[in-house]
Image (cartoon, rainbow, N blue to C red; front, side, top):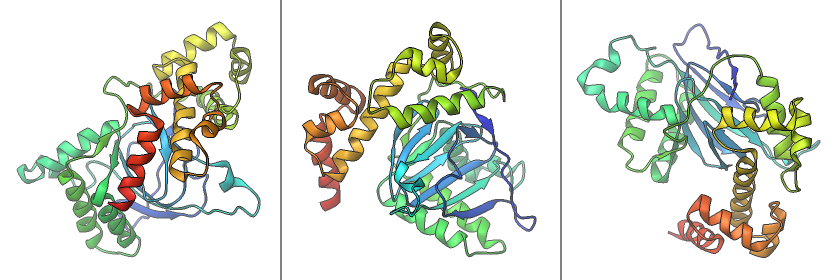
Length: 292
């Protein structure tokens, strides 16, 4: 992919930035930056793209994104409506790997943090009790000054490094080209796909959005995503189905069609292929987590 380079600004009095975002469009494009990103979605739902990983994000999620790893959080359409019934509330910290000095991470006591930041180059989904602890630290960072900021950030990284089950997001083989051009094209493809995935999207149609021929589009998309456009759409549809299963408002047969699948057998096949679970098992396991 050809993501957009984002220049992350920080206040002159601080060595790294922490901010609160109350609008849904701050991270609403495919981008990367040199800074490591630690983000907590206090409120918000949508589709998360990190490297070649596609999944839904939801309220409460915490993610650690490594340096120069392309990512993109696309909030659901409801967040962009006039007088929207839902609001975004995100806390995010950006810091350079060497902001505390070039030798700091080489200290033997920091081997676990060095290892964590190396794993974060694939993106890490923080789970369980760890994400709540990290979310509380990010909240505190918003209101902290002086060197206590650095102590809190180290505490957050220590907690994540001690977590036994952070989930790696992007595949180990994912490679990306940091050339600046074509960012508008890939963003147009993403936006169009997210707005129209519930219906069939013809190859000629999406190639027109990218302003290239259908045969060129197939080569272009796979060279930048390591997957076909059909695979990309299926992952978006399965991600949407996961969201609907969690909300538990529709029968499995209803959400099959609401997610853009033409028949139940293909829905069941691709859902299990991507999640390694049947839709019913996925739903039961999620409900079990809520009552555990």
